[in-house]
Length: 148
Image (cartoon, rainbow, N blue to C red; front, side, top):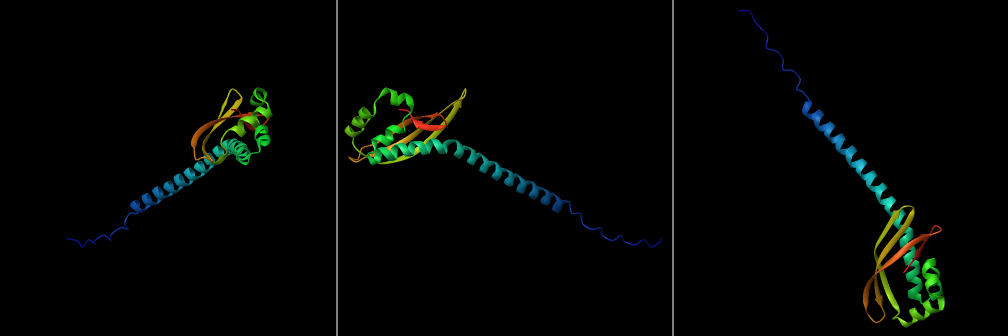
């Protein structure tokens, strides 16, 4: 019987390590892609609803200050055609004064080239009465306006 040397142990395969590295890289790429996509979606939505929200805020700030002329100027053309500034001022003066408000939601839609929106607002009058109101918003000549 001839002497046969015992084969040296082969280097351990590193398949498990390779698989873990590949899985880790894929997870990192997925997380990075999800983060970038999420940020892009957030910015897109913010850019769409931000100006509409700003318009509602401008209108409500004017109402809260009692600056009825400025509030009237924030109304859409059909609303201004329905009611005169003097009547609008009389109606606003007859209501309890607005103490504070909170815009709880803004929605913007575009259908057949017409862009509209709405703002849900929680209103608190000086007498303590709280109500929730939906303000309709329309885009006229590139500017958002309240259209009640």
